[in-house]
Length: 415
Image 1 (cartoon, rainbow, N blue to C red):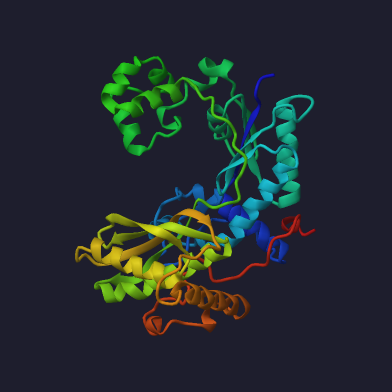
Image 2: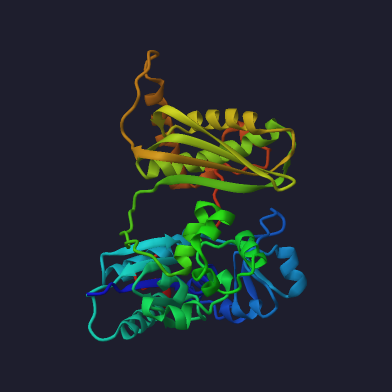
């Protein structure tokens, strides 16, 4: 039996999820029908378009564009701040729906996933994909594209043929007809710079690369050239790997309300990021062996350092102390525009490294747990570190301000 792989891609995910949720709460205006974007606000300089409606796209507004530039193209643009809690919940609902039909569902990103549906349906794959699209729309309130193929690579390519709310097929037997004529920028894993380099070398279509001598591509792109050639020929035998609930890393980042000119200016924001990252780590019942800190400077350069620990930790203050050291090692005197903290190499929590001074780690763990409980009950602002007062740093650097209730099945269609 030939493999049957679906790539499910949510249409304008963040904006569609926001619109669907608001409609269930009584709003009459569907922001998908007007020029609208998800992107933050100018005051906090979180001014990047994360998602745009189709009416907004007609003005030339695209993902990654600054809000200032987007507003010049459309002065009456409706701007909505992102709510990642809501988006994760919507993504989880999609995963749960697909998992009712096959256990082989792999989350590729927050708004797209793969599903191996081999042997899971009768009739044609297209009919089954259409049925799934209709169920997502009627049950969850947003639309998806589904690419159908015998490999993950071609299924992902097919799902992007045209949008929204469509099913497209692309099989290994259809490369000459459907795949090779595609423009080179449609090739998977090709970024802007690689695409331009390929273009300058004379390649215009995927077929141009597919029919090239792989040795020549390796000459120009080293080992990556062989992967480019393989993808251009539609070669992909990778399996759909079921979704693993265990996080591989936990972190958070933020753009500062004003550039941090000195380390003392940056420390309160680093602490705020450590608060939420360690809080999420403890909520997941995990500890981290690796702590990393990233700095985006005022001239938009990005640098990061990481520290491997002898024993894992979930302590807020230990993580903060490490991040301060990393910042001091990284900082070159250029004002910091953005900061990020990431915890990786996670292991299950519960074990504590004993010390010779009465187990300070155990006492700190009790303090952290108490703080988590109080903030969980009364809100993040009920407890603040004295060092963050009057600095402009939030007690906990969350990416959203509004707290949405846990989404239940069918909530997005008002059921």
